[in-house]
Image 1 (spheres, one colour):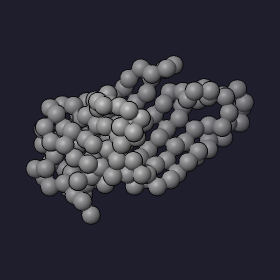
Image 2 (cartoon, rainbow, N blue to C red):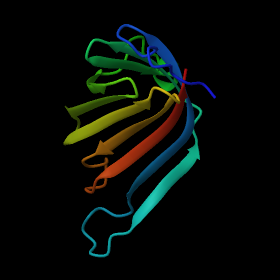
Image 3 (cartoon, rainbow, N blue to C red):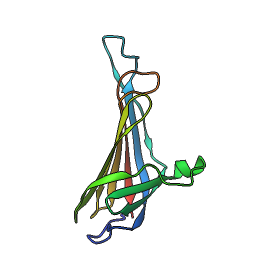
Image 4 (cartoon, rainbow, N blue to C red):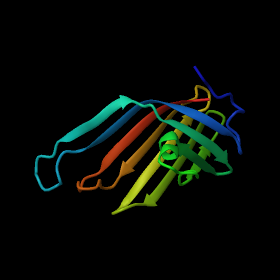
Length: 139
C-alpha cells in the first residue's frame, strides 16, 4: 500500500491520490414535506485521481475529471490548518450558488490514506444540505 514517510509531505511537493470510494447523500424532497428521508444517492468505487500539491499553507489539487472537462489549472486551494508529522488537514469555506460549501481534506501521512469531504448548504433543486465523501490512497 502506498504511504507517506514523515518527511514526504513537506512544502512544495506534489503527489497522486487514487480514488477508492465515493459516496453522496442528500434528502429526497424539497424541504417542504415534514417527514424528510435521507437517501444515499450513490456509493461507488471511485475512479477519479487527484493531483495534490502542498505549497506553504495552501493545498492545491486538480482532479482527473476536471482535466477531462477541459480545466488547465488547479481547483480553488484549501487552507492547511494542520501539517504535523502524522497528518495534514486542509479546509475551505467558499460561497457557491446559492449558499456556502465547506471542503475538508484529511491526509494520514504515515499510511497515505486521505478523505475529501464536501458539504453543500443546499443542492440545486433541493433546499436541504447534502454531503459528498471520497476516500483516496496517496503516494
